[in-house]
Amino acid sequence: MKNTLSKDIDLKGKKVLLRVDLNVPMKNGAITETSRIEKIIPTIELLSEKQAKIIILSHIGRPKGRVVKEMSLKPISEKLSILLKKNVMFNNSAINERINSELNQISNGSIVMLENIRFNKEEESNDINFAKKISDLGDVYVNDAFSCSHRSHASIDAITKYIPSYFGLQIAQEISALERITSKIEKPVSLIIGGSKISTKFKIINNLIKKFDNIVIVGGMANTILKHIGKNVGNSICEINSGSLVKEIFENSKKYNCKIILPNDVVVSKSLNGSGIEKDTDAVSDNEMILDIGPKTISSIEKIINSSKTVLWNGPAGYFENTNFQNGTKKILDAISRRSINEKIFSVAGGGETVAAINKFKKSKSFTFISTAGGAFLEYLEGKTLPGIKALNKDV
Image 1 (cartoon, rainbow, N blue to C red):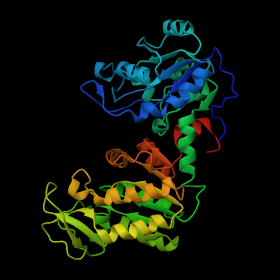
Image 2 (cartoon, rainbow, N blue to C red; image 1 turned 45 degrees about the vertical axis):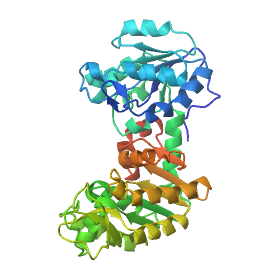
Image 3 (tube, helix red, strand yellow; image 1 turned 180 degrees about the vertical axis):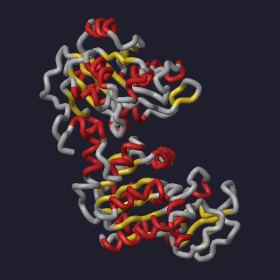
Image 4 (cartoon, rainbow, N blue to C red; image 1 turned 60 degrees about the vertical axis):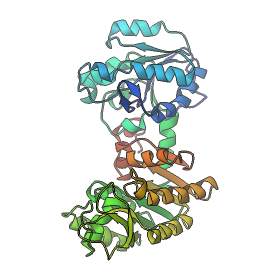
């Protein structure tokens, strides 16, 4: 991948603007999950080794161009200092000539984090004058924020017009992993996809159906398809107006010779807090909800995973927050984990609920790659060109 930060680029004494995504979950001012912070550490360590002056640009929340005290990056700079075991200075000055003078005085290898870039209304409008103003703060720009790269924002897109620009290590790794499930695939390749609404994942399925051998559909999405083919799904999550989408999926599966796999048995209950009963999909009652996949379905998914060389997982198999309905999600994780650890498959997982399930069952080391990118991850799988990637790689 061209324009990627490498060890042979001389950055000694140069001010490097490092755009990262530190939009981490917080509760009462405390950071509750640190994976996004941890992922940027290799790039920071490389820049520090190269004796660059590191200037971190990031955001948290949606302040919409206003200064919102609760959305300050100061607590995140303190957490990063702890993780790096190195001081991360915090500078909340406005972006102007004064801050430029302050940044010129920092020593080689030092790290300074600027205040939430979204406190400036020009950021989200991709304002070229604001982008030029940001670029004047540094000598080199590095984008290591894949999870923000689907946004046409000034510190992601327009800034690359005014300053030598590179991909960071984490974003290069993310793109490389996604290429191996979209364009450089080792077959057989299988997708396991869940979630509540088929309408939100329809474009992903339609894009990948052309390239994949198997698409396993679980969760609320499966309920919609089951209902469309005449099954009773009771009170389950279901989109009643998605018949045309379902029809198109089946038509494309035949066209591209991709097998669609649906649950043939499920775990049901009358409430989210209830206990589960295993039933075939033909036996669901009107007052029941489908909250997990059953043992026969789990067995068929395990066989697909075991016969695949590449697996992409996005979306849990059921309501895993309740231990009575976590078995399907956990068994899928176990099967992928066994194959990944033995290097039998290339496995990628992504999406908010997916990462939550991986963390809950302590399987973060069980995938070849786990994406924390959210919207950018999903848009890439839909086949969209991401502005932040295009800005650095005109061939994409």
